[in-house]
Structures are given as structure tokens and as C-alpha cells.
Image (cartoon, rainbow, N blue to C red; front, side):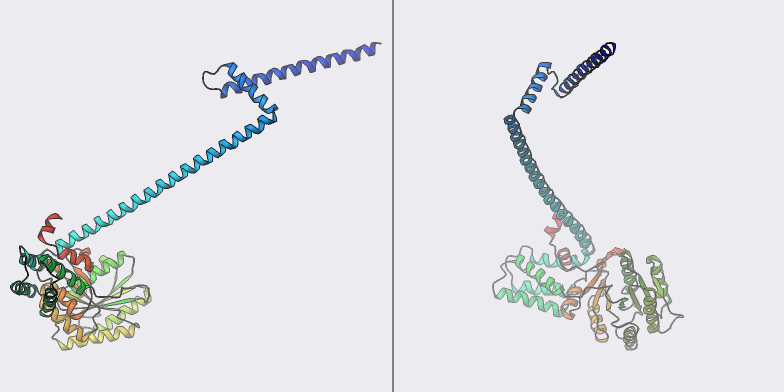
Length: 427
């Protein structure tokens, strides 16, 4: 009997423990749910609202139809969200396209501004030539409504005195007469436009670009008379090439003048270029050039620039020496020299035309560097050179600074040179 009572007592105790534990868990769950409802409810929401929401949630979970409706509502919401996201993406993409257009416009404006600055510097460098040639032509046409024979005679005088050259002057006048006969020129503006067009055409001579990577070392033989600016031109070229990352070797083959060798050594130090010089004054210039090419091959240099003795085109023995240097360069390196650059002083005017003729008979001149254009009114000689000899102008010099030796751009040159006074005032 006692054992039975003990068992009953144990069962009662376990039941009481289970009851109180279940009650405690229910209270805890209710408190937690209330806490969650309070945290998600809007500010100022009442407990009744939270209770109502809980009831709605419970009924929705209990009712399968409501669950399906809830799922449909969720899908609709997701679809709306996707549509909104897609629309936002399209708007973003459109915004990107607009940004790209703006960037392209800004890039074009920057390019135009750079070209204008470049032209402005070129205009300054060509101011004397423009004053001697273009301004005189512009003065002829000022106030003229009709083109007659007397005007053409005056134009001929201006062209000749500006060192354009007799042959080129006659060619330009013939172009104008032909256009007049066809009644294609109505006024002086039309004549001006024709001159500009034909001169641009004459200056546009096709020239192979220099390729420093295809056949190393690329060799340049520089020739010209004393005082034309050969050594200075070589130094400026070396400066530009080394700044572009090329390794340059300079050949001091003007062995008749110690000053020329010293000048080239100075440029070598400035440009970090190796200079190969003669063992003694008066040494064979061909051997110096040969050694320079071999040095370039040994050191992996990209470019060899050979200076040569300044000589008058009337001195036959010296012209023969140039021919020898040319041959020796070919023996040192196949296809050398890749370029024979004739340096001309623009202030020499018609004498520069004669130099092109004489040097051209001795060597295959492939390019011209016209220096000192900033210091002369005789810059019209460049038109005669290109028209008569069909040799491209590679470089023009418009100052003393290293960047004043610039690659010749026909469009920039003509636009900077052929600008009338009223146009100049607007710049």
C-alpha cells in the first residue's frame, strides 16, 4: 500500500512539473511574439494593431486559399519590382550613353583647342613669311571686285619676290588664268581660295613614314651647306627620339671641323646619345659612319644619325665624298641609309632651290628639313621646292627651342600661313 501511494505521488509531481513548464514556455513565446510585433510595427502603432496583424497572419497560414492568394500577391510584387529594376537599368544605361556623348564632345573640344594652340605657335613662327607673301597677296585683293590682267601681273611680282620660284609662279598664274577662262573665279576671294588649294596640293607629297623597328638600326644621313643648321637639327632630332624611348647613336662625320665634333658631343650629353667621333681631325668621315653603325648593332641602338661636313654644292670633291659615305653606309648595314635628309636654310631663298638641285644630282634626297622659317620673309621657297622637285618636307624649324623643330603638317602649315588680316584679328 505504501508503495502504491509513493508511485501516485511521483506521478502527481511529474504532472505538476510538466504543467508548470508548459505554461512557462507559452508565456515566453507570447512575450517574444509581442516583442517582434512591436519592433516591426510603425512608430505609434498600438498593441491592438499588432494583435490584429498576428491574427491575420495566423488565419492566412491556416487557410490554403489565402496562402495561394498570398503567393500570387508576392509574385505580383516581385514582377513589379523586376519591372521597376529593369526600367531603372534602362534609365541608367541611357544616362551612360549621355555621359559617353558628353565625353566625346569634351574630347573633340580638347583636340580642337590643342590644334588651335599649335596653329597659334605656328602662326607666330611664320609671321615674317606671312608678312612677305600672304599679306602682300591679301593687300592686292583688298577691295577688288574684278580680276584683270594688271592684277595678275602684280600677283606674279609678289610671288617672285617671295622666293616662290619662277617655275612655280608661272604654274600658279596658269591655274588662275585657266579658271578665269572657264569663268570659275567670280571675285578675289575665289582667287585666294584657289591659291590656297593649289599650294596645299603642291606641298602634299607622299612620304614613307619612318619605321624605327623594322630594320634596326634605322640610319639617317644628314647633308647640307655650312650654316644651314645641320648639327643643331641632328641634336633636336636626337632629343625627340630619345624622349620617345629610342636609343640613338650619333656619328660625328664632319671631320674637317673640330667645332662640329664638339657641338655634336654636347648634344650627345644632353640627349644621352652615344657619339662616335674621329680619332683625329681630318680623318676619313666614311670610317666614322661605318664605326657608328657597327656600334649601334653591338649595343642594340635603334637609330644612327650621321652628321657630314658642310660643303658648297659647287665643290665637286666634297660632293664625291658624300657619295662615298652613302656607299659605305650600305656596306655597314643593308638598306642604309634609310633616309638622306637635306637641311636647308629658309633665309637663303632661291639659293636653297639651287642646293636642292645640286645635292639631288649627287644623292637620292628623300626628305628636307627647312630651318629658320621664323627669321625670314622668304619662306615661300618651300612651295617652289615641293612643286619643282617633288621632295617631301619632313621638318620645319620655327625657333631655337628643341620642340621648335616640328614635323611638317601640310594642313596646319597652309592654315597658319594663308590667313588674311581680317581672319587674324578674330584669332
